[in-house]
Length: 118
Image 1 (cartoon, helix red, strand yellow):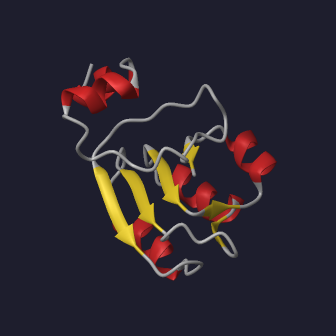
Image 2 (cartoon, helix red, strand yellow):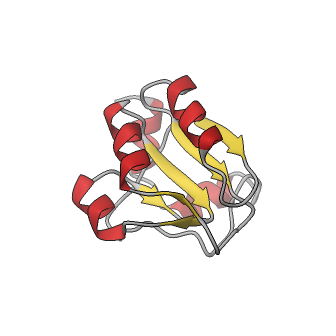
Image 3 (tube, one colour):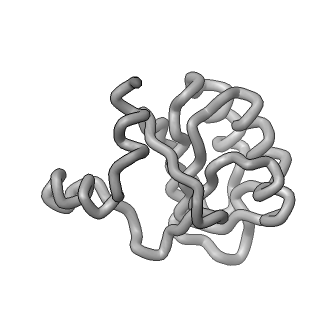
């Protein structure tokens, strides 16, 4: 079992406590499906709210297993990604996507069974 796989078995609260509360994200970010978990090397991208060209570039540059962490500045008026972009990330075998912003096409993404947090 890889190091990342062992992290998937731990509650996020225990990981946060072990890191003295450093490196945690907003409390308002949740998985689209309650049972989804992910762990992996963070591939980060910071974008202006609603812009997603950089997200496509990041998916292309990330390695399989990486978790794409997108700082969309909490923008709530324009989606950062939908089922097409999430499908690309799954095809690339990324470990998941975490977004500080809005995701659309929720039921289609849930059907992809790919961990997305927003």
